[in-house]
Length: 117
Image (cartoon, rainbow, N blue to C red; front, side, top):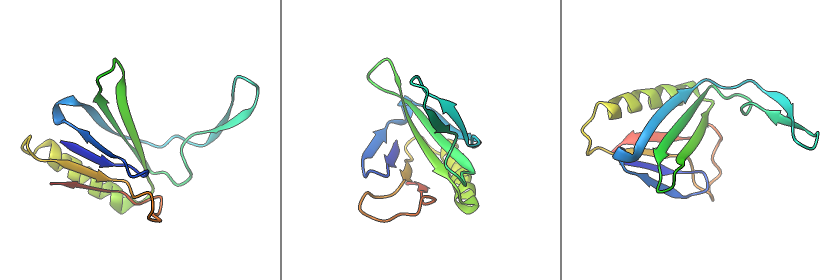
């Protein structure tokens, strides 16, 4: 089971058999694009992003569900990589827990925790 608490405080439970992928992605550099009405809009990832964690999973619709987390702290990135590696090799009964903050708690943007339970 994958358990994710997002920054808005919502709890997402994803059965391991519905998990499609967990991807660690390199950041996209900042830039600008022009939208349909000719306005320039910023593109790329937030400043300081060193890694992105993308979780894709099956839903009850024809579309995949996805969650994306941004990380700016090297120590957190190493801890996440280690935890994901351990979880991937663990018994299917083990849970992966991702805590991306609470809505009423001031949380630095680099804060996210991931653990096996």
